[in-house]
Amino acid sequence: MPLVTSTDMFKRAYSEKYAVGAFNVNNMEIIQGIVQAAAKENAPLILQVSAGARKYARPVYLKKLVEAAIEDTGLDIVLHLDHGEDFEICKQCIDDGFTSVMIDGSKHPFEENIALTKRVVDYAHEKGVVVEAELGKLAGIEDNIKVSGKNATFTDPDEAVEFVERTKVDSLAIAIGTSHGAYKFKGEPKLDFELLETITRLLPEYPLVLHGSSTVIPEFVQMCNDFGGNIPGAKGVPEPMLRQASKLGVCKINIDTDLRLAMTAAIRKSFVENPDVFDPRKYLGKGRTAIEEMVAHKIKDVLGCSGKA
Image (tube, rainbow, N blue to C red):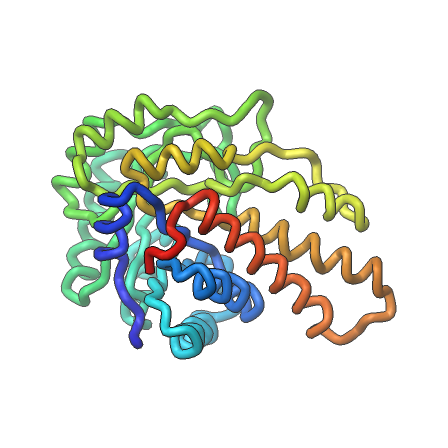
């Protein structure tokens, strides 16, 4: 089975009020853990590659690993570029066989963002590839994305309508209070559901996306620290908020930080409990299992997409 686009996935997700998980991948064990969980839960799946992942693992290796996952499980999988910063990287991924790309022009003024996004959309649609864009700026840090809290801006609903109409982009990442990485600011994380409802009302049946949606599971943070880490207490997005967002037009929810924490916690624990281990299969296998268990939880209890493949 070939890679697929997210078009049909999002139509069903919007209609049945759940979200599809978009999980960032960097190596074989991460891909295997995610895909094994999705296969067991019979869930739709988006695997996404950041600029950092492309540099670390190289695109051809990641694509072949994803193709192997499809052959192994028979799942429909979307291969998505996360946070493409310019036309060239989007074009390269499209030409390399990605079925979905994100062009992130949110750092640019509104008109420049529209022009850049439309250029990517025009090229992608000729190749049968779908495009995600971003409007508004999320705070936080992820790979090469760095936005301070004072520079974060929520998505303007009227601008969102104009942006979608003029660019013909297939989905839109909005800023309603999530943050890349782990929350670094004081107070409780909050999502602006009134703003989300307004955008959904103005863009009916249109797939919205939430970035920065890891919950920063406390058990993994604690495990990391118990076995030699020094990760400060951090606050992610409470899982009930993500479930509510999926009922209000959010069809894709990005998860990365929780994957990193799960794998790191399991590997640190393995080294402490077995200090003489030197076989990578022993500790990377523990990390893979931790990711599988965490992703299965997300699919069943947070995204609500179990059995929707």
